Image 1: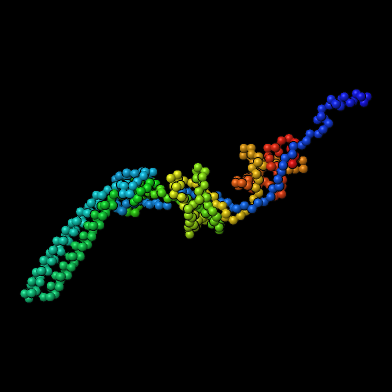
Image 2: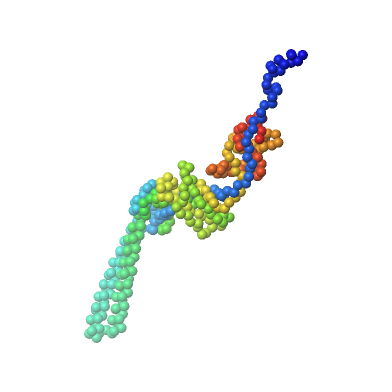
Length: 338
């Protein structure tokens, strides 16, 4: 009997006699880690030098020679205003000057006559004084008319609206046929050599850390200078924070463009941080394998920012002190054990 059993035992598969070794997956204990707080904000690119171009004369817009995005040079013509009213003003002021000159000449001639008569004793000193006063009044009227004529000529020159400096047209606000009024903007221009990023900072942020600006290319820039404006917006409860960009960055950006701003070092906070290998990503699902009494259990988590050199933040789904698999792929295999 025993002689028959021995060969059968020798032919039996090894697996039926020796249990398979479980797949051991290394784990780590989740612990809170003090990290420098980061604040993510949206910023808008602004030109540091921007001007509203307006007419100083009233009249209809005759021509517009530029459009948004055009480059302009100092003194380049942008708009022309109907100068017929200004021309009429120049002609009227010229006529007033001529009349004042004639009245002044007449007053001087009358004064000379009064002086001659006074020397002969035919008129009194009072009459002579009155003639002198008339000359002074005529002289003042002549000067006033001359000043008005100069103002009219100056107003006629205001019918040509030109660029104040080299730059670009950001927007045009008037079309031919529109009424131009003194001080009413017709267009806005900006100098592209220096730009900044304006960020609306919540008033609840009492301390401001180090800002960094992310360009569309993924490059990060440090502002050359920062300025926190003294007045807050009552509606949004924010204050504008201006971040000056390095000169070399201006060529790659345009006003109005939105950029992300990362503020680091504005205090500290406690975060759970895991290596990225411990996180299982399946579409929109993010999960980790938590060590249990028998094997691992898959648990969904909510992730935060990636900390270079440290890992990825876990905002929800884990507690400090729990153990998770270092390798989420291996922990998902059948028979995996911590």
